[in-house]
Amino acid sequence: MPIKLPSDLPAYRTLQNEGVMVMPEDKAVHQDIRPMRIGLLNLMPKKIQTETQFARLLGATPLQVELTLMRMTDHQPRNTSSEHIDSFYETFSEVAESGRKFDGMIITGAPVEQLDYEEVTYWDELAQVFDWTQDHVHSIFGVCWGAMAMINHFHGIDKHPLKKKAFGCFRHQNMAPASPYLQGFADDFVVPVSRWTEMRQDEIDRGEGLITLLGSDEVGPCLVQDPNHRALYIFNHLEYDSDTLKQEYDRDVAAGQDIEVPRNYYPDDDPTRPPLNRWRSHAHLLYGNWISELYLTTPFDITEIGVSSTDLRI
Image (cartoon, rainbow, N blue to C red; front, side, top):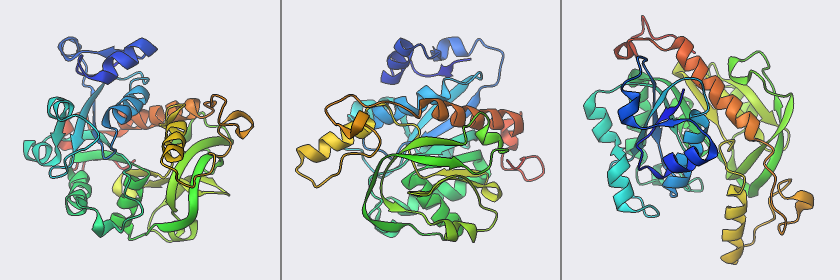
């Protein structure tokens, strides 16, 4: 089944050209099936790039996915045209006031990880989002800073600054092979990492009910399950395109910043050579497994999401 997107969204044409199944809204309404309703709270400055990355992964599953693009109410994006934002995005306040519920929601990272949480201009509203999800979303997927913010809000676990940026492709271990979210995963594989802060395993181990699914000896925990809040937290970037780390590296070099070549990314660590994507298959597995778990556990009547007697824990 395809992912349902507006036909004039830039991601629609990009994914169509890649062979990803996409469907315009007018055709989707003729299918006799309840789609999985997924919200994407996009906190990244490059909105179109991030939309496409996640739509690509969600559109590769065998279920129809209806994607709603969301943004913070009082935070005006600077790196994406107002025309694009006005055409395709809803503010959180608009979504909340509508009373809609979602099978799943992804909360992306944001380039604010070196700030204290309370210094982020939209922190108070984001905390409201986290609380709202507990009654309106069956499963929440936090990514990078979004995951750090969620685990801090729900468990009080803080991020810690690194002496230098964790940047590159690092080997990770499958720590819970029986987890339904890791079906098809290898025992050892690489994951793109790009962050100035870290989460610490010993602190996560003390969190109530938290289960670490993926981790690295070099860059720490990667994927954590939080059954009590029906949440997954991933601190790294399986959704990245092949050239996303290259774009970040080239940007920092052009700005004259002291940045190391991303580790284990370019062949022979030579930035003049095209990088190799060695994580794509695991990205599709993870998000496909997440969508599968949504389908198996979410109430068929979407209005029952958040009702304790029927809302299954995942």
